[in-house]
Length: 373
Ligand code: ZN
Image 1 (cartoon, rainbow, N blue to C red):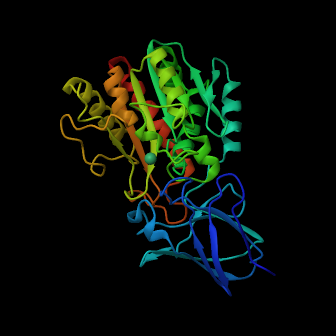
Image 2: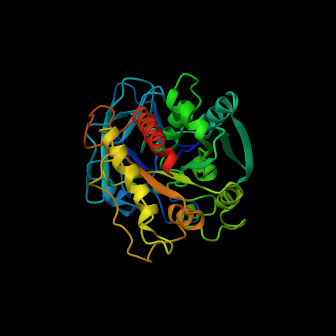
């Protein structure tokens, strides 16, 4: 039987360099019109009964080479359950892993994928729930719709948006959890939140990068999270339409959901360094982070990014821009590609189910301070 490797599907990304016996040499393709790459997703057919060794030869030149030490490749036979390949290793710029094939087709990915088809299933399912309004805010450069779901009747304006960086699929798993909780008629916290706030939710900020199998950019190689000061129809229509909708409602609370390649923990980043920083507004962000850490052992305050110095915030990034523009309690949530070091799980690592549960904890935490934002 001939071994066949294929990535010609939604979010697929791999290039075959060579297949010699049981050794498979691969490369990750760059985002279109960009030098960023790290996301991979491919399937292998025709290997049942064999053990193959894979090498991703260009891992060392990827966007975040610090993401590889301690990382484990995810694999699945049914595209539902994704496990870690325990023998993944990284040395000399090459990511290696082996797999014993017990079935005809096996799928491999950087993290459990979240396809555009699943996105449309999610948006359509949630749009049918009572009290939910769906709006198509515009289209991307590839012509895909920009979806926004609105629910709740309260005066506080809450914006949740995810996957500006399309390879960070954990962000849309988080969204699935958030939307399911907010539309659960039996959830008292959701009921409270819906009475006090109106939620505007963009589950996927970057459909083009998602479908193209990109790590970090849209159809023309633009990093959307460097466009929020001056989005344009030519380079970043995704940000242009979402920021326009935000201008229409104002923003009291915002969360931008991401994944981080290097840090093996969940953490938040705030908006230190914006020109309009006040300790009062910043204090609300710190209060949220402390309350979340108290609410779940899946969140912590020790690991994270360095804070910007006073006046040094990058206003092209959404979290800073929204805090400055609207006086919003604004934050970036990061979840790991690596296993989550606290509560490590050798079989599944940080997983879609845990992303969804973290979303529930974030909403519980928001409910505890919704009157103060
Ligand atoms: Zn990101």
